[in-house]
Length: 469
Image (spheres, rainbow, N blue to C red):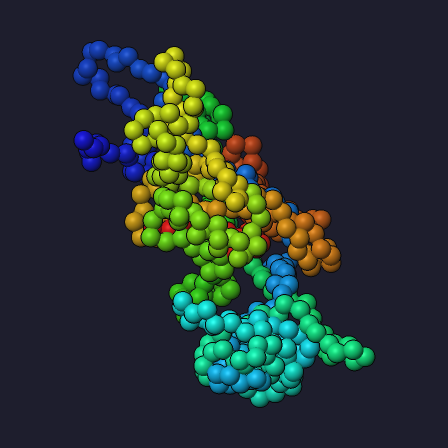
């Protein structure tokens, strides 16, 4: 048995660009001598239709003064290279190694440091420990090199041209010698994002504002009345508020050869949204949802490598939520053939709880449904580019704020909006025209304008996980 494909949920847009007869409920058939019974209040068949709430739950908003937002994130504390070529041969007591890791110009190894050398070949158990005796000069031509004297009597364990990983674990010096030569500068990684301007507008003529209908309208923010334009204005406002969030989630920077950069005034178009940032600088779990502990263990091991914090929130669609519930239920010895999970003291008078709000396995994971991923008018039911969930670290991190000129605590996700002492562009709304109380022009209409200029900052994207289909 399964749900029939028809009837299905409605996707016909509920808003029209112009006033049509389909926007109103009418019955002016004078040939019908019987009046229908009518329900004067509009029925809210889709409940709360807004999808915004995600950023309000996990982030914060703060002002910014510039067209560009920049911040620095800490680099690694210790040094390890994973693409190092063994230039020497097996049994050499002293050997030179070449660092081939990307973006490494001079290397950070120094004479006197002790290193561990591990063969990268799958299944290999060949390792060495050695003392660095020489390093290539700073600015030397070619990839940086270093020479090692091995502690093992058998000398180098790996064959010539084997790729190895090398990391520093300490140092050793002879008595009465000079100290360490050279120093290592702290490494920061710099990121930036730019705000985008988001606008919307609602207009109604003065004559239509005077038209009273017989249907009492309602909206999610509690507005009600018998004037249809009130409903349209409030729904425009609600859509705009949703777009303030979804634009921060979905925004992408315009590529150099794209059509958007040719649009007047948009040469530097686009912004780095959350999905774009995590997809490029974070962690991506592809091919469906993790449904076993082994798959979650792989995610946890990746988070270990990224230095992630202990508490995380999983924002998931409905199917992902079910998959997590089923995975956790399977851990109960009675879960496969019964319903004892969830509420373990169930009785016949008690509602059975078949869901879980979270679990702990090395890290704490709290699960919550994300309406944006379920709504069929947004990301719900997408095939290509579907996102099933997002793991967001709960808490804040320290970054260098260029506006403040000092380190500051910031949520991993937060929104920066343009503002100054004279102009606040977080959420602007103004009315123009000559109707509805406005008196700014001779236009026989009321125009409600909405504007915001903002960008989302995804700090420590390496701590996030994007779950894709």
